Amino acid sequence: MGSIEANLQQVKGRISHACVAAGRPVESVTLLAVSKTFAAESVRQAHAAGQIAFGENYVQEALDKIAALAALRPRIEWHLIGPLQSNKTRPVAETFDWVHSVDRLKIAERLAAQRPPGLPPLQICLQVNISEEASKSGLAPSDVPMVARAVAALPRERIVLRGLMAIPEPAADPALQRVPHRALRELMGAVNDRGLGLDTLSMGMSADLEAAVLEGATMVRVGTALFGRR
Ligand SMILES: *Cc1c(COP(=O)(O)O)cnc(C)c1O
Image (cartoon, rainbow, N blue to C red; front, side):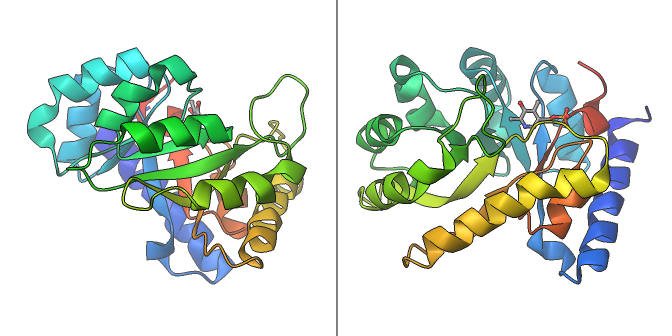
């Protein structure tokens, strides 16, 4: 592994390359740097190298890091990408910019009710169990249209439904990696056919970001390739 700065350039190069291969503008993909388990100092280094958006999995760890880096706001963006229990929604609604891991209506309702009126609306994605693994969290694909409609009906000054997120089952073969990403894109298309106007596909990680970009990812969540092994 190189320095965080060198890794950042390398990952951006991978994203640009994949965008060119997909015939998409490079600016159509946002890099989310997944800093879970890494110290605030690593986030500070990545931020100094130009990185804006950071993803965290564990609420308490994230809150500590966000507090330690409070001086960087508003030039830094915090995204929750890990599981969210309903008893933890309040500090999340009060602190984060995005939540990618909303997997039921009740969580979205609580986030909307608890988002402080002075802040911009919380941006959210619905997490989908796209590979339909029994052990994985996320909505069943068939439940997504109904939940998306209900979430989109919540007060938009508090919460805005932006798109879908998935963590597909890992696959080594690049062609196989594209299958669940394609399914998530098609699911968002089906939801948008009903007029919801979603614009965010949060998919692709260190090992499969190219496959995700080829299938339309607008946000790739990259940890290991930037910060090293956890
Ligand atoms: C840890 C994590 C990532 C980053 O995975 P890497 O393989 O380290 O790039 C992305 N998304 C979610 C939801 C994660 O938990």
